[in-house]
Image (cartoon, rainbow, N blue to C red; front, side, top):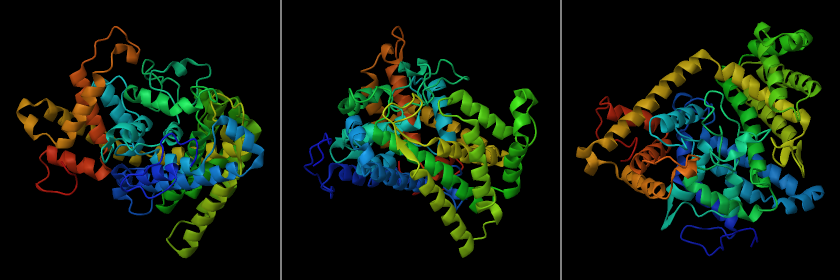
Length: 497
């Protein structure tokens, strides 16, 4: 039995493994919150893309696969034995479980849904914590998931700590550090909004501290555990590679446009570097802006030489390799995608290092500088040639309006005194849970000691957010159709009330 497992393994109905960390894994994959990820957007909605693109479930499985491979390599490397033990360990089972759980809280429509729910939660529903996908994942495994007689999944401290990419709340003053940890910075659009990313709401802060307690004295309060750092790095690798695969498959990522941008920067790099930002125009501009952004945010690792090498590596492998022929579904096309994915995954896993004293904006586990730059360029290609497309923006604007309308409709339902007896049972239970939690809080928990909290309003708001965040994309659409009177189907299996 691993001495790091806080929960003593006695076993309950449904637990089949003997290792507590394997039990954690089994509990996560058995959760309905995990199953629903098959219907949640990774980049584009699963309902409109068939089997060609990743959804949140297949993404989570690949993060778990990559994370386990990294953990097994590091834990088998004698050079790191003493360091890993001193930092708290690197167990492949812990990493795999945390990777499988890390996206449980992602709402309908992926990151777009996350931004919309956060805005509505704070500005419309009066929740100082707002909404954050990582914090929602942590809330699910500790509060809102139900397993037998327990609330939450009763996971070990090690796995809960490994889920915490950002081991702080929205108002923890890490954002004032110079530099701030990655994700803890303040949004320019909302300077009073606290950290952009955070790992737990105030209601789960005590649990966060309990999960992190075994690492006291080993890690700074704001630092990821080694296992969280492995999971975070695996997430970056999976995102950088597999999203490019997806949009090659559906014909969105075109060789000509990517080649033009990368090769223009290579040709004109010297001129572009000396131009003022307003004067940057034409092909190569976005790559140059990326180079500058890396120096501004990550000067601890950013290197012009490594960046130029990374642009060349991506150009050679992606432009002259994967994108050289359109994807036509043939065996040859499938083999090309598989080779690209395998080659890049192995390249990046082999470049993983462990540092005893990493920079503030990095975990203890990180990519070597050349591969770190390559990941930044790969992610930039995805952002520039997929996420910035106007047709995707059109689709997402509709999804944002749908979520806003759905939240308003549920809020109106909760406020209707004539409908109290007919509210969905799950929403009523979520209101009760949130009310009990809010009753234990005061303004000081959110950095405003003089503020008087409206417990009833906060309970309604958190219940609505918890309920909407647990829907799939299709369920969100079907539920709004019903609430708007557009659906003529009274009994449906699209959602259960």
